[in-house]
Image 1: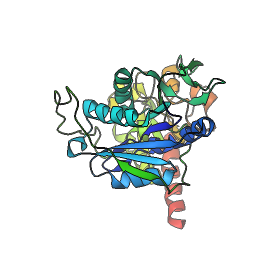
Image 2 (image 1 turned 120 degrees about the vertical axis):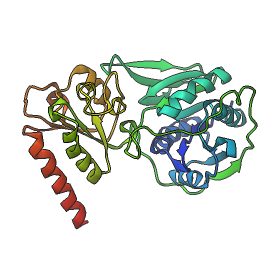
Image 3 (image 1 turned 90 degrees about the vertical axis):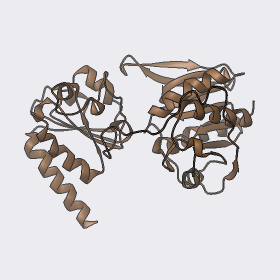
Length: 329
């Protein structure tokens, strides 16, 4: 085992996932303590642009594993590729984004490498013996679990998106390629394609800004107001469980305990009271804006800003203001 920190640099269509760039910050902090390097592994096909993005982020070394059979994500093939990279680097810690791909891939890699695994991590450090120590939210974010891994075995962690900033001070990484050799059982499942639910609209789990609506929107047609604001902000549109159950939005956009956990930089909630199940899914947002006529709504207790007014007047006015500010820039 070396003192290096390995990052799985998730990419899609030759574009690095923003959460993968954010991993460089905690990886660098760990590497500074171990005295090792930060190594990024990019897996896919035609991944030059993705590798260049990781170089800019400031890693020391980049390993690319490129093959036409890796063009579309396959849990078994990507597992084999990442295991090969880990066996080559022999890192002390392996970090992945806590994305859909990261959550699917990490336990498979951990099983193959007999490694420890921590998920949805928000803090990472090394204890006095040099073992990885992590914190992850539990009980809907009301408490935090502290876990310490054995020093003599690989530690794997998936890190929650938007927990750390993405650095941009790199540019001198050494790059090498690693040939892909399919493993036993990799061909049992053939992935012909991945279709994104909701078309080209951003997924709430991956957006920096989310505009979410509740049952107060009254119907599906009124969600068009949120989509207009989201377009101006380059944001995703989310919804509460009540709104999804009423058919106003698909459940793929549901934020909350039974939906998706999000940690955007900005969360705008329009007409959402803020039941505990919803708060559990968005409490980690950096800035929360609450638009609601009810001053006693639970969401008002956690919001950074509250606009106590009719959302049907506030949202169009906010959209117009954002559009005007963009026109001036």
